[in-house]
Length: 282
Image: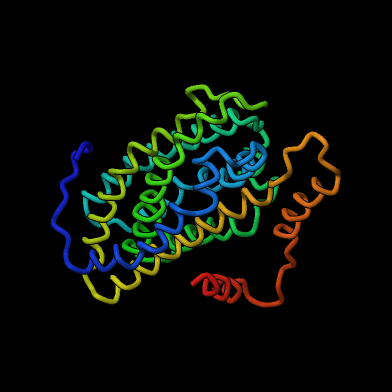
């Protein structure tokens, strides 16, 4: 391995894990979102939409890893987490560069990350899940959900959609400079390696059959929620590209976002609501 981490032969249950999550992994790679970006069919406002909405998640990602690091009991995993946290902190800045390349204002992105502007419900659900599993779950579940599933599929997604970025070069309001590409290029490269090391950590901490089953469910949940977040965040910013676009078309895009944001707080415990919401994804 390029990072100096040794990998061991997989026990039989890892093959079951990979088979179990494959449909959800493939669904993401073949999703409407991935196809629209890779083909250049996604509009610039839609591109800005998912980049803006996912930024708080990217911004929080090193913090998810830091929560899991507290649970580590061996030097191999500790070294991996420390390396990964350092890398992910830099990648949060690279995401801002990508947004700026597509015409987003840096302060607008920071406002969303700092909670001054709300994110869409499905994006918040993704972030809430990663906070939950890294703080309350076992280390094996946390790593499976975060570094194995999210980082792993992100590498595959980056490799798939990166060629589509070139088609945005001559579009109005877009600057396809090296900084705009950097986040995707970095993840297309290193996210082929990090998930393999993450899986090694999972294997060390998921010896019991019951824990292995929980690891599978955690990875599945992350893939499902990431898929929902990406789909919702670009659809919410959809609008016709015609110069003669009517005000009603613009309102429809705003209305979709408002429907996701305007959620009344329920008259029941948050933990109960979370449980039901997550179960609906299963």
